[in-house]
Image (tube, rainbow, N blue to C red; front, top):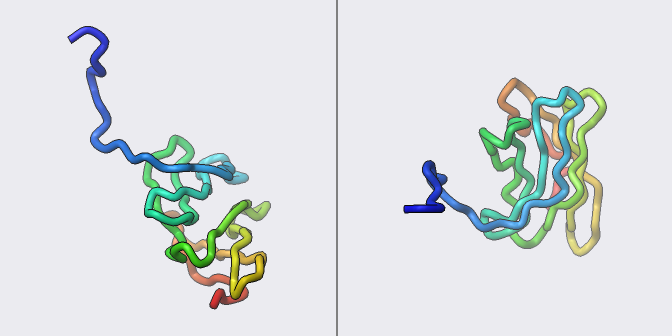
Length: 107
């Protein structure tokens, strides 16, 4: 069929993706997306593959503005906690990032 995509994507997800930032090493991207139904922080490879959801806050906390630390080992962001917007951070470990801590803890 003329105009048809020869290799259609396996899954199309409608989502608002924003606040994307590439890591200092240039190999990862951090962003906020609502693909899960609420705003959450995700990380992926620089080409967009290997998308991994880092937060599971739900609608109560609405994380925004994630930024890499200069060494690429932490992500700082802001989120609503008990009605107030606070700055929080993740410490990442291993090649596949694992959230080892959120400081200060969000309630």
